[in-house]
Image (cartoon, rainbow, N blue to C red; front, side, top):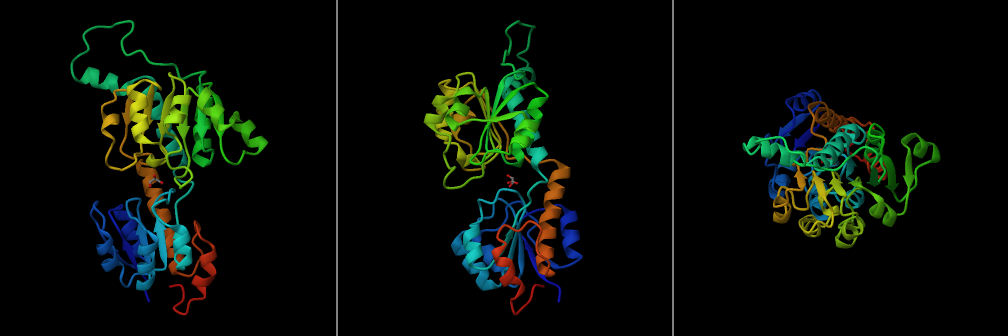
Length: 336
Ligand code: DGY
């Protein structure tokens, strides 16, 4: 029997066509996605859900989905803080994500934000666009150098490492802080030096955040950390908004505790703290870290492949809770 999959919001037509080769697809083709109640109604009779970051899977939601027979959430994205994975594990629901395919694209955007904030590109663009540019001036839109400066990377996973590789082209000194130190040969390859967190904050000219969001990392950059940074420093966040205390950051930018910020993620997306909107030294983007056609296509395909693998009895390649896999395959209703 063909399995049934729910796709919670708009994806590429190619993804739907691919899924439909193997399954019956209930497709919410709008960008709005589903409310929790709509999700429950539509999840009825589905074995898998293809989800996006705006879908919230709390313990309660997962318990109800389990009751409806949903066995797999194939998430489109590398970050999965919108899914209570331990609760999914308790309920025997498989969860997968899409690691690896978006590292370089997200690192590109982190670097683009770093450069834009350093060289005041958003201000420069607005200046030209609004007709204010009348003549060349020696000190017009002067920014700060990027080359030969110190890049600090907080969170040295795959994306952090991809950012470090880009820094080599700018002859930057690379410092990083991560709970686990990289192997010596990897540090050598990246020309990256592990330092304590306090030193990272103190010495970075650019601080780029690449941590996952968790209870431990929420607001891990707040007033104390921002005050510890150089007044000439630029903060870049392409990871998750709530890692940074946005109110503290708005104050830091307005009062010039730091020089600028490049932000792709926010605490309450799509809302942005009004203080940040008022800061000319903040370059803001609407959560587009992995947003290139190629990469978003790869993410969608990878999530679809994870879902279809589970439904045809194969272990999903990007499973986040492997403990569930054994019980899944031994279910009386089988794996697809
Ligand atoms: C990711 O992959 O985590 C992106 O932020 C989109 O969810």
